[in-house]
Image (cartoon, rainbow, N blue to C red):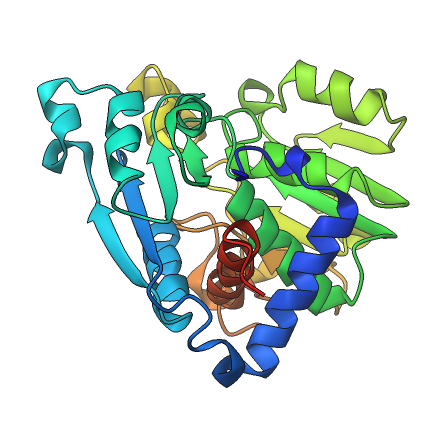
Length: 304
């Protein structure tokens, strides 16, 4: 029995295999309609979520399985003080696989140690979000036809953005990938990620506060929202929240084949005027999340 808590648990070969499987599901959805018949997914969401929870549910339904669970801690026994370990021990008896989101970093890891079925980390605090990373990798691979030889710009909140941390770790394993880290000084990428991933692997990267200066070099621009819930005080949030708003003007010197990604939800960091630009990939990206989660559920349930 295997769980997925951190994207680094998957080898490059396994990631490539999941992407290939997701592409096959997109091409032949009818072949997968009963792959998980009689299997149940429990969605344990101790923190609000729209896309992640609904795409997990849609993924399981499209595989012919069933879904049970809760969408906020208040509607579970956590509200009475039950531990995560006890919750998953119990739920393991009701479901074949668990997808769990929790505001505390490390909670899904603790859950995976207590569970008797596979656990998928659907986001833990500002820490990790491996299925978002798989979604991002599928999107990049479909848009660019490759995961190597790319320059990827991350813009916005690089300090608390778990999607950014996980995607940097994943992309760092492919050949000749360069990074542009675009953020206000207060929201810079944590130094441990720079040290353990970028410097350790001798990867090329630049850090800047100016998006326009790096725009012409980018194959991919990964936008993130400045998250109010990760700030300790309202003043800092208000001061920084509009630092990087992507507008049509800012795309004037961008490549014609740039791909713009965003894990969503968007607040105002991408102008809605960009939604009709062929380079905008974020709604497609949200859809691809369903297919890669279908591939992952099958892998962890060892369904052929």
